[in-house]
Length: 291
Image 1 (tube, rainbow, N blue to C red):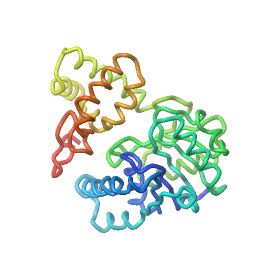
Image 2: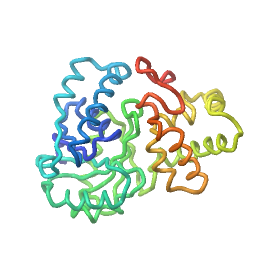
Image 3: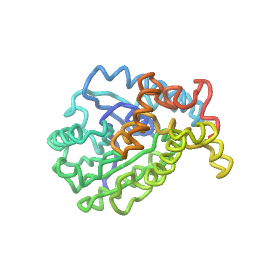
Image 4: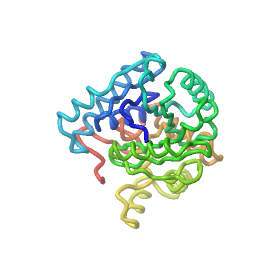
């Protein structure tokens, strides 16, 4: 089995920053690659926020946080970013053309040893594998938002993924503090989102129809099921940008909810828990109260 020491995270947005920080926190060398130096300040903002959250909610020590930052470097040149990569984790926007172009270039410049993984929640490995030039070393490694709390890693291969690459990624997921969830067959949404999205969609439909308000819907779910969070709290945790990107390509009711999110939240910079406000407000000095 191959040994993972050096990891390149492709994309330094919300999820990419979280993935990179968790990997660095567990002692691995991480390079964050993004297409533009203009993204650098955003990446730093994400990482600074994660520092606060890990100290507050993950019982991290200052020394561990400092070590994590020391394990992270940055690059805006793909060849340089993957020069020593044992593993890449792609977390760029859910646009097929963007991903295809990235993997075509990645397959050209990455070392032969490098295993490619995607964090995509909507595209299957079989949709992208041929663009990599090495479909046998390509698979999905999917993390949930707030992965320091929701510490699962859903791992899904294609029919061409080789056993060694798959086993290496499973072992790596465990090494970074995740619980590997093996998805035996390609499935959009993997396991978690396949269960979660219909439930959350039912909540949004109740709200948009005027059946009840956000707080009452969440309270009903928490009391009746014993769950620590309700569906709209879960929307905030997942991130309203992510929810919008999924819903805007869905059925009519989903697209209506996407438009509602865009007008009432995204345009106002309310992106959910990590931005401090979504359906609920999250003061910086507090965590998610019901965790």
